[in-house]
Amino acid sequence: MSRPVARLGLRSNSTAAALALAAAAMLVPANLLPVLSTESSGSDRSDTIFSGCVELWKQGLWAIALVVFTASILIPVLKIAGLCLLLLGARRGDPGQSRRLTRVYAALDFIGRWSMLDVFLAAFLTGLVQFGEFSTVTPRSGIVAFAAAVVLTVLATQAFDPRVLWAADTESQP
Amino acid sequence: MGETPSLTCRLCGAEYRAVVLEPGERALCVRCDTVLAQGSRLGPDTALVFSLTGLILALPASLLTFVSAGKLGAERLSSLFTGVASLWGGGMRSLAVLVLLCGGLIPLALLATLAAVHAQARLGWPKADLRPLVRFAHALGHWAIPEVQVLAVLVALMKLGSVVDVRLGPGFWCYCAMALSLLIAERSFDFDSSAPAGGSGAATKP
Ligand SMILES: [Zn+2]
Image: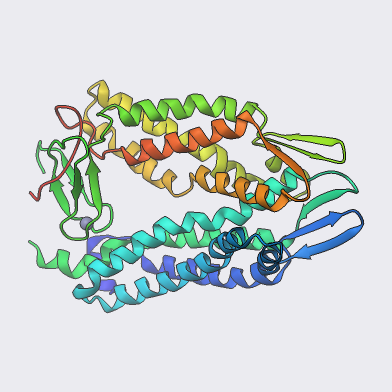
């Protein structure tokens, strides 16, 4: 893999691999730590990303629960799995897979942004729900870990150079 | 590639010679199916018009009331930057900066860059001068995500609906319109605006 990469002067995929690994590690605290605390008329509750989804589901907001689950849990995991697939594919260098893997890359590039949903949600709720003792929302440390994980997955996708998937093809051309 | 304007596929690096596209026509990379360029249905000035519209809309979007929320007689007005300010005040500064960048400053920078690229192309500047700007626009594209902020506000409203009395303000609608303008400007952003006649770049294999 490193031979054609070096010859074409492409960005290094080891950076992408390192960033994807860091993102995967960051997802652990992001999912275990609470992301938001809600204080409402004396009752306190802290939610992790997952318990927040469950709470929405219990309120009967199924569609919203699914949207938040997809953006905050499914997409980050899919992105890291997809990056692993791309990095392995680039290492193997099978020209028959180039087109399919390029589609995977384009899809990752497109869905990645939606995982920022929870970060915007936390920011918006924190800004809006400040009614003193009646109702107050406070962001917790989990959201910082989550934001870091999302930023790392975006950086990893950007660090990955899809042209390495076509390295064999480009070499055969004059 | 000589004097002929050339296009490089963003994903696989294949090189193409630019030709003029009809409105509504798209040029795909023969190797990986990526859209290389598209002739906008709304004419060659679409990207310029919508990036300028987006820039203008950014002003009311950031000044007018975004959302107002009432609970037990207490009313709270929030603007686009209220969340950012609360995060900053609460000590989560990195998060505040991230939200400010992705939801506000980078979309603005991208609109300004797209406007600059297309305005320059209209003035007949040589293509070589545009390439760094085009690359800059692509880099910004990953981080300009106002549409995600719009979805977050809608999700928050559904979530709060039963607890708090929430109303959307004009600032939010201007922000939505700005997000839409950015989307249209990005979509009709052909990669070769300095190509002759109408400015729509497209592709054939050299
Ligand atoms: Zn291509």
